[in-house]
Length: 630
Image 1 (cartoon, one colour):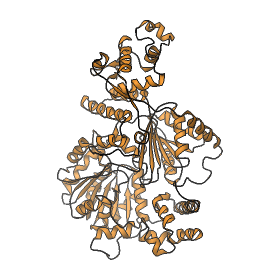
Image 2 (cartoon, helix red, strand yellow):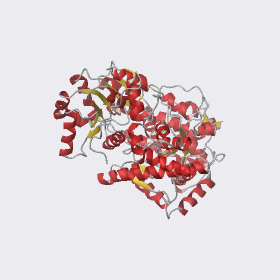
Image 3 (tube, rainbow, N blue to C red):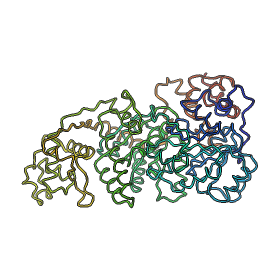
Image 4 (tube, rainbow, N blue to C red):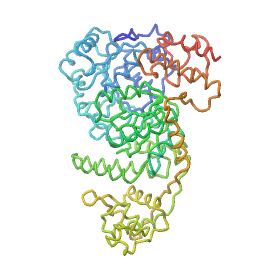
């Protein structure tokens, strides 16, 4: 095990005229910066403030970690979650970087030891929770300590308009007031224009240089399916694409989290629940298992994820609709942080819309905030119902234009058919109006299909002109029509009355035949694949962890055997040290070993992700494995 602070991380004598590049090569094991990293790092090393928007997996951490190792003094990193601090410090110590954290998980004596290390100049980075940072004791410590930089991670937490507001972040403006000469860098993976403006205002970063990277995550495949027995759909997705990969399944309620986790376990997939209602020790244990395992599924509410650095999460699935595209982008961004292919899959139905709108209207937020949130929910619905490239819609929301369709989402790979839905829309809107604007989709569809149910007969709706006029469409097709009419703003859910549909101002001209409507046609459900997936999953009940981890596609048998041997070596080393496997090496570095087949330390040192420290620690172990397969 490593000591509390690990050894000095200062790089050897510079091999170039660029100290930042020397640190990147010797400590982190990479030959060049990506995207705007070099420009951001140079600006911060020079003492400038920066607001950095960069997607998850884009290399945000390097934007402050490299300056921390170049500038004199300690870099203070403000981080909102204990798990995030712990994982990043663990990874830095693996690189030989002198790093520690201060949070409530430490004992008093451990906290004092970290504070002494800060005061004595024995640390390059210290991670601190925002509420700890603004205490008089810690501010006094900083005032007598040379500070290299303040890094404000997850900066969107300062925004009351954002999806992850943390009130304690509002106090961080004190850094500019107390330490005006120390550069600050605020970083976030997602923020629309309104949130960016609030970050700059609340953190006194009005003069900071803003760096906005592309929000595109080209390695992620986006897919949205209409709900049709969502658990079976989920299992089919996992069985077809991620039979033994690690991933996250998001649900809206705590009860659903536990039910889905139990159901997955019963069908052969090892899964754990995570939500705020579980005891803290259970949450921590489940999260630790997820981080240190290779193929576990975490079923969770949005309480899980912001502090997860696990780079080989191969999928994120949503069984319920997120409340905004910001939340969706942030949550799906936890997949494929290592740059390898990953999936973002979501099942979506009308019930999601009703639940989210009820939650919104019942919240204690002011009218202005609710208006903003309604707009965000409408954008989320538009993303689900679009017939266009999903990536184009997503990027457009964040103010970025993609000129051509991505080719890596469901609407690109399986182009969606659209149809003239004007007549169907008129029938649906007429059914809403003639039944008194009091009923939901289920009852209205029964009326349109001419089903004389007890409820239909009791209400006298079997005598309406609209009774039976919709037999040309199936129940599923009518569900799609109503869903799209809500998404398009032609119908709304009356949350103050009976919870049924009401016509909006936009729906009136459609109902009167004054406006046409085009609708997307949902792809046909693949029932055979779903049934087959259930059968295969149930057959695996005896051992969800049995068998090798799923390897990257396209490897020949010899490479596949080496890939699994390298993963086994990594897992053994990780278990010996009590750390997650990915802090030893990312999957991308293991794949480089498979492709390059280095046979000596000199060749091994050339692999991406192999710095000086990891070369010394791990080269011999992995070279021994490679020699067996050479």
